[in-house]
Length: 381
Image 1 (cartoon, one colour):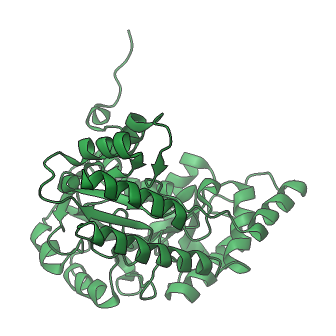
Image 2 (tube, rainbow, N blue to C red):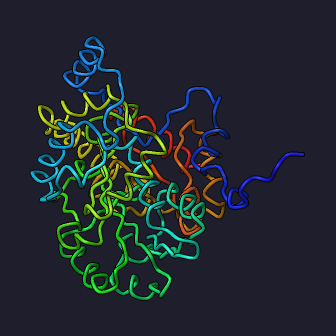
C-alpha cells in the first residue's frame, strides 16, 4: 500500500500561466506576448567566460555559498548599484531567484505564520508559503495603482504576521516603489520585527528613476532577492543572490546546502564576468524596453484600454473594458484562437486580477506592432 503524500500539496495548483500556455499551445501563427524573459542573448563576453571555465575544467563543487571571488564581487556590485552593504558572509549564490525565495521562506516561516502579499502578484510565492504551513494574506492594490500603501499594510498586520513580500519592479504590473514610498512602509514595519522579503530581480530594468532598495532603510529585517536572469539575459544560467544580515544568512545557508549543495560552477564563472566587466550590460536592454513600453502604451490607449504605465520590468497589466463580460481566461483564449495573439489572463496572478491581462513586451517592436494590430481588429468585432 502506497504511503500518503503531503496534504499541503492538495491545495497547490499548477501555475495559471502554464495552464493557459497549455490551452493555447498548437495554435498556428501565434504571436506570444506571454514570455517573462528577455528576448536578448546573454552578452558574448559572459558566454566566453563560461566556455573558458569548461575548457579549464572548472567543473567541481564550489563552497556552498558560492565562489569566494564571486561573493566579493557581488558585495562590491550591490553596494555600487544600490547602496547595499553586505560582506561576503552575508551573501549566498543561489540557483536562480526562485531558489532564493524558497530558501528565505523555509528559513523564517513556522506553521500558522502569515505572509502579506500585495495583490495582484507573481504566482510563485503563495505555493511556497502554503508548503511551509503558513498563510498568505493578500492585500488588494487595484485601487492604489498597484502600490501597497502604509494604511493597507497596517490594516493587515496581525500578531501572526511573520513577513511581507514586496516585488518591485513588479511582475505582473511593472510598477515600482520610490524611496519615499519605501520609507513610509518601513515606518510601519520598523517596530514590528516583521521580515521584509524584497524581490528585486528587475532592479536593473527601471525607466524613470534608479532602483532603490528597502534594505538600507530597514537592514536588520530585510532579505534581498536578486539575480542575473533579467539584468543580463541569463535566465537559463540560474544565478540568483540572497543578501541579508549574517545572523540570517547563516541559517539560510543550511537550507541552501541541503537543497542544492551549490550553484553551477560554470554559471558562477559567467556571473563573475557579468557583475565585473559587464556590470552595465543592462543599459542597452533597458533603453530598448523603454522604447517598446512607450510604443505599446500608445497603442493600448488608442484601443481604449486603461493603462497604468510601468516603472520597470517588461509588462503591462491591462484592465479589460467593462463591456467585456467574460473572465480573463476565457477572453484570453478567444483572443488567442481568433486573433492569434497570446497574453496571460490576469486570473493567473490572483482573483483580483481577473479583470486584467498581462502583456509582455519582451519581443521586437515588429512583433508588438503586428500583435497590437491583430488585437485592435479583434476588439473592433
